Amino acid sequence: MSSEEILTGVRRIIGEMCPLGARDVAPADRIMEDLGYDSMAVVELALVLEAEFALEPIDEEQAIDLVTVEDVAELVGRMVSARA
Amino acid sequence: MTVLEELPDITESPDAKPSGNLPTSKDLYYRWERQQWSVAALDLTKDQETWGTLRAFYRTELLNALTELEVGEVTVVETLSSLVDKAPTDDDRIYLSTQLADEGRHVRFFQTYLREAAGISGEGLADSADYTNHFAPELRRVTGAVWAKGDRDSWYEALVYYHLVTEGVLAATALRTTRQLAKRLPLPALVEGLTNVTRDESRHVAFGMIAARDGVAAGYAEPVRRAYLHGLELGARVLVGPLRKQAVPAVKTALVFRAAQLRGGFEIARDRAVRQLAHIGLPDAVADAAEVWDTALERALDAYEEHWNTPHPVRAAGSLKESA
Ligand SMILES: [Fe+2]
Ligand SMILES: [Fe+2]
Image (cartoon, rainbow over all chains, first blue to last red):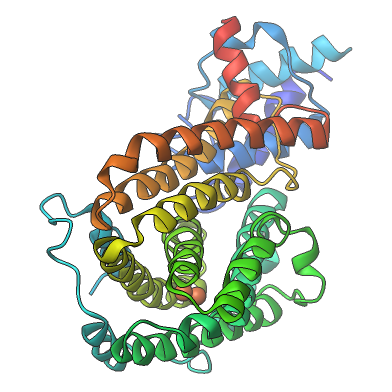
């Protein structure tokens, strides 16, 4: 799966699940500040991404700040390639 | 009147003197007359659409919470009668008979809501509930002992398990966290029903505190204290819920959020458990209560890990921080 495909999939899911109502989201949109996700919604999002991309925990995640849509896509990409 | 604010007021008003601001059981009777509501008047169809679109995480969260509340209500309906019958005063007995009606209404509310809004039958719900497995048997034992022995020690013990732990700690916490969740989804009929239940429960907890305070003052401090500490030990276990599988997100940021949410619920309960003691005249039991609570919570997290063969999210997130 290319990083382009991952970004497209992540954008679609984040947009569909947006607590402010389904919408198109941009890579630079901030999940919590711009898109209205709170901590419960972030957990729900993570579980949906996990199921969609068959994600498993990776060790080096701790340093990452998940702020924008792009950050999430990048993390998902790393988790997908760690799995491969 | 905003109700969620009313519940904490009972125990959290910083200026409340231990024997000061609490109402009498007669006051609570009249409050009950003014605060009637009806299950049949709630429009549960308002929530059906949201239930249809809920994803697994919220759905599981809500169903777990509503199940624990429903089985708790069923258990309290079944066990209140000995407390009514052997109440210390006539005013207490008259107040308690209003509470029996409330608890019946709560069962109707949760069962009707689960069936009509969530599309879930109440059958078999109790079997896997942590309250059923860890607390209900003890509540049945102590309320049964009120019939069998008929003495005041037994009455005060049962009161503590019933009003102070089941209602004052467990139900108050579950109502608060579930109502917050219902508000944000949104599930307006559930918010309305839980608001009504919370208003009723705040009267029940107020009664528990005045009755326990009077008991402590009348020489029953020892049974009250003993029951309280043992009740908290069981209560902490119910709250963690070793039998309830929790999602452990693979994304660590989400895992940390999840742990913080769960820990938030534990803290609301612990705070209430500790604060009630000042109101009933047992401030010197605070340190013991906190220790019993914390130990029981850790043991319940151990039990979760043993049962599911994987750490509870609170533990999983904790080890993350330690290794960072
Ligand atoms: Fe109730
Ligand atoms: Fe109650």
